[in-house]
Length: 102
Image (cartoon, rainbow, N blue to C red; front, side, top):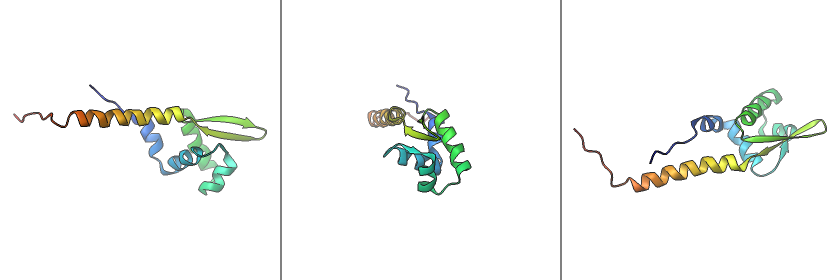
């Protein structure tokens, strides 16, 4: 059984600020202003990271007047978690498998 993990998504989530944004959005839907306050990041920097998260399908947007709210897509995170769970299961099942050296 070949287990694969979405490496592109891991790269997206590996950035400390993006991971912080995802962690905040796991608790509530927030607008850019809230995220600037919570992270201390500059608006332009935050916008770039939000664009990466949006393009990766991790967050979705909801326009609200002149603000844009961001919401985490739990299915994407759950899918990645499932990939890691499959990898762990594979490792548990392979504990007795040892390839002989030539």
